[in-house]
Image 1: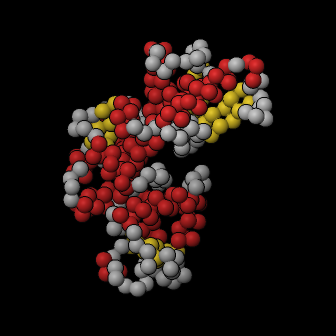
Image 2: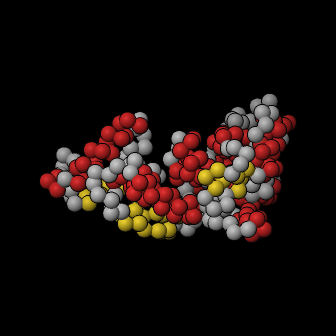
Image 3: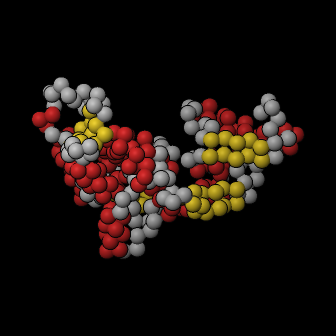
Length: 294
């Protein structure tokens, strides 16, 4: 602000702060924006926090992914200073929540239609959300047996809504949850995963991960191999092929997620010394050639 900008551009400016500091700075930015003497004529902010967007901005553009697009535009005419506890503020948050939920978890009209849509989705080569296995298992353990509102679930867990939807989306890809409308509910596989036996969890996750077309494709690449060596695939080649398959994705984070899921579920092993990926085999463990299996 010391340079006297006419437009203030911010990308997740408060996400790395503690709750109290974030709230203090949001209030300060809101005060400066509403004060005509500052010379600040406009502000653009990227955020996953719905309440933050409603608190600060006059026009909210909700984005959806795959492909990237504008899902909806909401004009926010609430007067400054805005009270997050007021009924108009809450209604605005619910409106944005509804648009964002439909963007990431479309309505499923009937059980039969939901199953058909899910199976169709699972047959497509789709990238994995950048979600760790521990986050998936944590979500499953946190869910109640009855269906839950996704927004209330997000508040109960204490995560940002956009980040929470990514975890839910990853769980839905593995048929661990269903998302009828704005709700989240466990599937039979999801309930099985809640047991304490880690090895049993790995078996369930392996079964579900192997249903994903992306993993089936990677295993096919490994079996065919390259340079006359079937059964292995170089990490560089894997990254290049992922970049070709998903030109709108960042290949390195996607590859990290694939390898993390594959290692945990005992589907893939990674040899950093040789720079290769291969199928998991128990006999590999203990051999000097495998230097990094996590």
